[in-house]
Length: 216
Image (cartoon, rainbow, N blue to C red; front, side):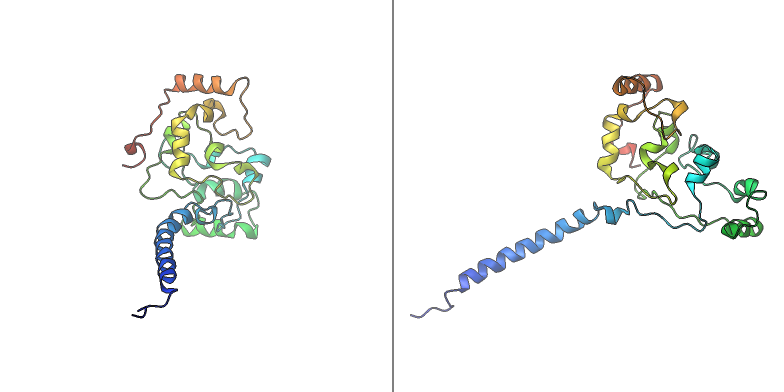
């Protein structure tokens, strides 16, 4: 009795089954890999803003402390964005006619806030409080990088769950004196690990890794 199928059919079926299996696996794995890529997280991509605000000039040339503009960073969940009134406190006298500052003047006289674009955007299902981190010795540079060297600000960290947990499990390496919170050039004197342990003990830093610490 002759074969119902040609001799190569078994090989074809095997190849088809393997291809289907790889396709199912790729369908599951690809999204998980994609969301972890730098491209998807927009790391190191300068964010365009409605005003060409150069942090290098304001922090290095003018010596303005982070907390002057982000004035709620040590007392609320949000770091805060400076109001147009604060900008005009200086720019009503300095560069008052500059074309670059036209959006600021328009905002000031219209009463409409400047529509700044967020750089570090945590997912809605994550609770993050700036104040608790700042008051426990975590410096601005630990999360935001050397903003004082950025013409246009960009995200420098992944902001993934594993990145957050890495610090929560061993916070000592990321701690500094409260007097150096906004100092992006600060370096520890002596043994960094010993200093971190001392700061953690003095400020009551806890290793919070339970789910409700970040997901509420």
